[in-house]
Amino acid sequence: MVKQERAARTREALVRAAAHEFEHTGYEGTSLTRVAGAAGISVGALTFHFSSKAGLAQAVRTRGDAAVRACVAEAGAGTEPALDSVVALTLALARLLEEDEVVRAAVRLWREVPDGDGTWSGLWLPAVAETLDRAGGAGLGADVAEHDVVLLAEYLLAGAESRLRERLHGPPAAGGGEGEGEGEGSVEGHLSRLWALVLPGLSKH
Image (cartoon, rainbow, N blue to C red):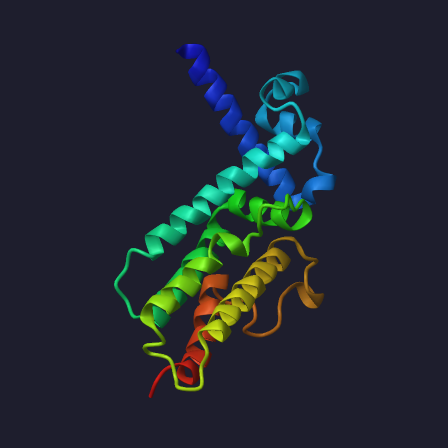
């Protein structure tokens, strides 16, 4: 039992350390030596748990994917109108991206090391489509297609993820800061304001 608990703690430390590396340097830039060092173990001990970098990347992605699915399930448990539910889901995912380095690493791995089983947006975008489909167009303007709302949600969240990545890892702006107003608040807050701008054009009046 003690050995099992120690092994579980070691695997957890490795997944966390690997997520940090993958999120910051990408799959190709990640070194198993750095991952092992950050986890406080030897490379030999790392390979006991994960035989390759690909296996470690899969463990990170599995953990991140599970967090996204849990977020989708929680957001889908509400009783709001369809459009409100879609907005709430995208905001919850933006918040998850900001707060969870493992999720950010998983998203980057989806982009850099596709495995043919789907995409990052495939984890949550079907829930958007299903929410709108169940509502049968209720709450949408007469000239608004459900497909276009799905596409909008995908583009907005892709932009939020890109903006967050730039803010965390991009070069500092000239003068040591961002443009006026651009850096204020969270990415979730930015996304919320964008939704507020477009919702009047989507909703039934």
